[in-house]
Image (cartoon, rainbow, N blue to C red; front, side, top):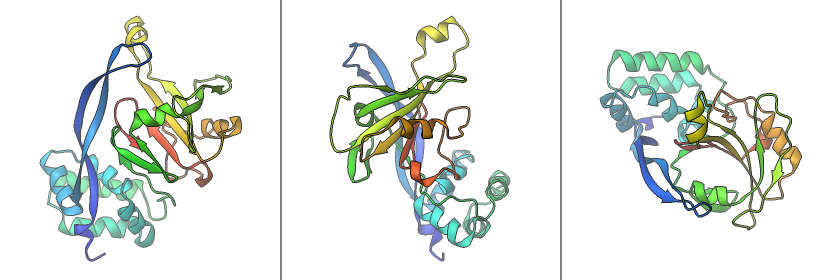
Length: 241
């Protein structure tokens, strides 16, 4: 780990947006995405400190293949302490280091890779390249809405694009609190299931039954490997799997 300061990571910059027109209803809507830049670990820490985005440290550690490999091999505390040795000094960052070690004890990093991508970035999954979130969504052939207490079955749909890859989605609408929300809220939380073969109802139910947080995020360190690859989309932020 001697060269850990030179390891590359990706960090997200603040949200940007663009106006697009829907092919289905010809209405215009906003698409939000993050621009991403590549940093060394040392440069990323300076970026985090300068922008006071100390919360980004957790994402830097959890959403980077090299750092995840190191934490699995050497332990979380060992890797964080190595980073601490060349990081800019500051109380908030020290608190973030200690909080991360407490939250993610040695041995807790799952045997999977979790990465964050822009919604307009090309992604290769199972040997197939998707050209951003719209392309992933265009391949959807089965959909399951997850609501509290709902027993609805998955519904089949005609995908806009067909090919040698199959996509399903387990989704949920953003919470609404008044009539204005119900009339205007169009954002969703989605978990996209990617398979090389036809996705079955059992596949969808397996993903639906996974524990999730309040934002329907199914991906975590304890997720069973047999349900991967899985993509999570948080409505106006980013993709993870």
